[in-house]
Length: 432
Image (cartoon, rainbow, N blue to C red; front, top):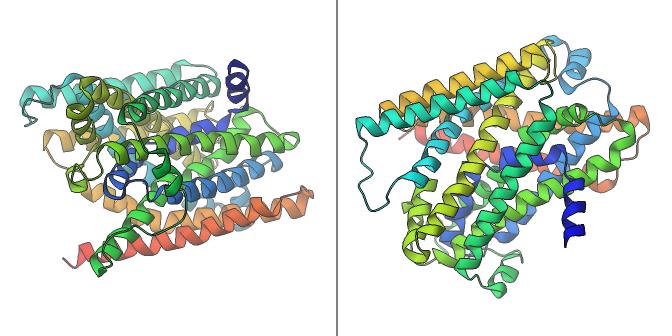
């Protein structure tokens, strides 16, 4: 067992950072709601999304180790600097908007640790000030660490490993307490549609659940960042096998944690709690407490905090690094401009989150704006990675297996489907 864990840790690299970014509050909430509503029936969808994420992450790693230039520099050389700037801006705006959600999620996780669920959760002035203070302090600590550490990548990788394995331990204990059905889990890995009444409303809800689960697990922006992380790691063309193994193991951990969350919800909440009552991660923790005691809610909140904090830090780094690269100002997190732009992304998320806390409002408009950008951004990033992967193979002669290229092609098609779903949702919101 010790030997297995040692080998597992050695196999982890840049992909664990990507996994920690993707496994944020939105992913936890979606997995919990799907488990609550459908039980174990959609575990196969999660598994499929994880495979797509593995393929896209492996492709991005391959591009990063084969090419001397970064992706945005490659785009600038091929199509001009404005194209590279557009790529950087889309990624930056997406992560800056979702950074707002990460700020709010960190506060929600902290509430789960300090708030008595039996008491009213109505907002008070002191409670709002506590939330604002938590947001400001957390952002301050992250920014100070980013500027204070000389070699940021290695501490970042270690921190993400600690946070991810904290989630793994917390959610595993919760799952064991829930006593899941092994037969149900095995059956959920077999592709099938949910066994609900076949009505048009149920078909629509099932489709949204399927796409929502894929969207929160298969993050093209996260995979895109892998091409930068392998360069920070110092890998080159001799490390292509390491990149593939890293993608499989790191993203595999993401899949395991998500499956733990969904299975816990399926075992504990399916048929007991209405899925629509789970509006945020704090609601899930409160629902677990009456069933398994305060320890379960506390453990869940610890896992959520680890997820929110890891996504909180890594998400901002994606935006700052890719925008700086697009502008031609440097692509390493050790350089000044990626840090400055990351600070701006953190500041935008913090400012909007503070406003939403003080006004007791949900930052819905910001999320909708981010979704609109994702419509354009995700498919464009996916097919850019596919194109550069094919070009890298042609230029270097490096061998790309059929699986490494076939899976990203399937992933690109999925991003188009997700984009269509988002366009439809935005159209419905605009006409209601």
